[in-house]
Length: 76
Image (tube, rainbow, N blue to C red; front, side, top):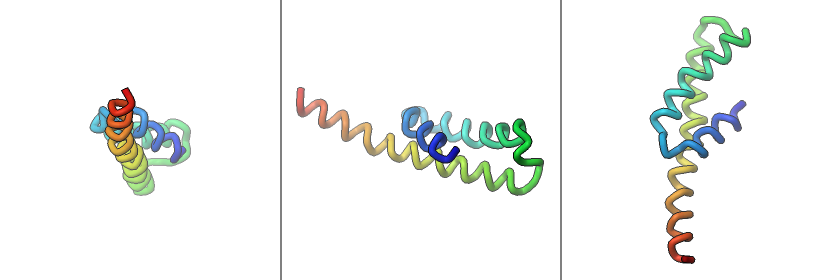
């Protein structure tokens, strides 16, 4: 699921605050809902890792998007 969170951040990186909050709340909800984890410290650590992975995707978006706009502007 790590690539999913990175992809989420990369695609929706323009709205980075929403992406990070969704990762912080959505990933633990998914773990609890599927029974993969209970209410324990591992859930908090998993939430932090989810935010880190989504943050990496946001960083990719915020780096690549301006470069793509610059290249598109230079070509057109």
